Image 1 (tube, helix red, strand yellow):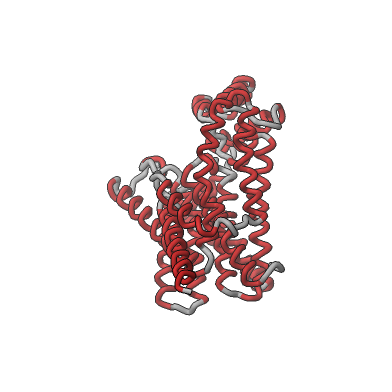
Image 2 (image 1 turned 90 degrees about the vertical axis):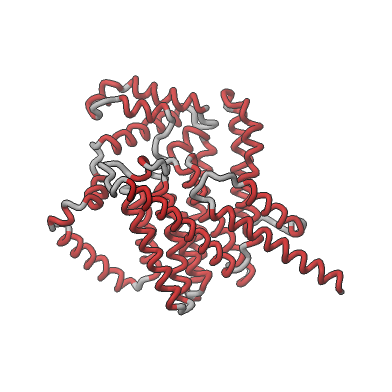
Length: 421
């Protein structure tokens, strides 16, 4: 009996070790620090449980994608030399498959939410110090570009639903002090996203929030709310204050497709579709993508010169192989596997939503956390319309975080309610 007790206790230590690994990986989403330490802790922590551990259907679909990527690159003759390099990098995705072992309760997921929220706050602090150093004057630029922060505002927009998840959690638990604190933290994060002046980030907050409201609010109240909101926005938008507000002007400029930035995106999206049609199975090598975009620009130079004052900007973006759209980039990079990948992300989003409706009547912790994971994934789905999420470190990590939370909640709900969920 003592021997069995020791085994049981040792397993608890392994679970704790794996959980620390998850905490570490969650804390470094916004950094470029090596994730090896967290992955090693995950693997060691998982060792006693691997024999009876089974991946669920969604994880198997994700595993199939990661295994097929090097295979498709092999058939793309220009990239055979990096196939083994890609195979060696697959270990970086172990957290997707092992993390549900350690996030086996909603309390542990709450702990991870707190870690990520603190990480976002530290990032907000870094942004504040930079803004202070330039007297909060960005001269028409964004802090992302000037402070070399990459796509921080986009990632914060997606992960703001982690902070919102904490707000809902403490509201459900009736912990008023923590509810106030988490609400203030959430508003701080939203404030710094707004300061980023990234239109894609604005949409990545608004669209999931509207979706969550539609899921939760009574239809009649929702209808009245929409009518009042439209009326109120119509009145406010006529005021000089809003007309001259830099953030409002930045947001509404998204509809001006003749502006240089949206125009370049639309041109490269058209080029991506043409390239995919020519090579829909295995996609293109990195050099092939670059040449494909540059050839399209050269072929349509006269027409494009009427749209853009100069072609130097679009040529630079083409050389960097960045169409500013994850879906287009996936198609030209991976061919039919890109279609599978895009379908996979939307399938996870649908399955998350399905789980939300299955437990909606419960209005419990699992429900509010599912809303949070849904918000994260949908947010990055929106961001993917204007940015190459999968090719950008912090945005890819943010998307994977949302998927990992969904996988973990799926397993928790299955254990709690049985196969019917």
